[in-house]
Image 1 (cartoon, helix red, strand yellow):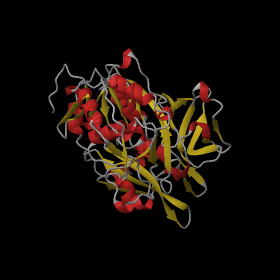
Image 2 (cartoon, helix red, strand yellow; image 1 turned 90 degrees about the vertical axis):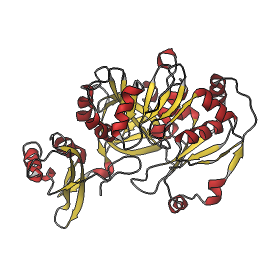
Image 3 (tube, helix red, strand yellow; image 1 turned 30 degrees about the vertical axis):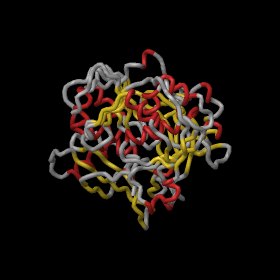
Image 4 (cartoon, helix red, strand yellow; image 1 turned 180 degrees about the horizontal axis):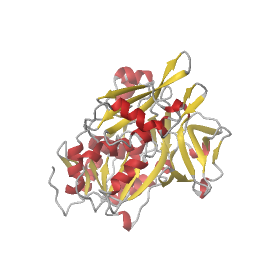
Length: 414
């Protein structure tokens, strides 16, 4: 673990790479920049953020790119080697404090940052946002100044930028926990006195087996990026007794627009006339809430929702994930939530396989938690029989070593 100076104000700590950088270091490195790449692609997250922040001082459009994208992948998105190497010059400026720098970037009206969507439902789309949209839900003030963030998202994805902006506008510390060494991530929780965590349900399930004792300093746990997982949320409370759990709905196209407790999200009053539900129960959002992209007046999110009696929205499933079995619609999340209740199960993904007679067969890929319990296929079937209708029970169950995921951490439904 990196040893830090208690008197220093740290910006970025990466225990795995043995890096610690203060806000003084960050300001000096930004001030030393003479030019920045318009395509931001760097496997060193600190250097990526230095270049990103330096670019935020000028009215230009920058593109965030995953560091592991190959040249072939980039070319399919319309980015060639010439564009990757393109830079823009920065004007010389003398910055006396990070507060002065924050004021400067807040006054930059036409800076934009572009993202590519995950492409889980087709070719990735290019979306660009200005700082107003990106920082829509950033909260600042004295009560946020002591927050210590466990950084658990890909730094080039929208959710990662949300945490990044919340941290820098309050001069908070971020501790890198975005890696597969969950034992190291767990040690970081206590060693660096982390108070805030924001991650996908998948990440929380991955780190959960490494937790022990309690972590009383953690005040807030935020879920995002996937459908809310009520079971893992309840499990986490035994380790984080003082934490409030929040669920956030956001996407690359929209930014962050909804938040709430559990799977019920509240529509903010100022957005009430710009968020609606279609006749097919699909969430639709007006283009005025979106980043710059080609879209109709109302954007179909692809998320199926139900409106509850108290006016909140409850998410049911992605429209594209619903499985048609002999004319019945099966929500894969419903089946996953039941199977995951078994103590032997660490993770599961439900998907459909083509079938001549029923259209689709339900298939389950199941990752076990290491507990051997005999015939798990039979145990899963019996567990489901008393809880769901027969057509919702998987006809094929695979015990797998791992669940395939996209770059954004979402399950791959084959």
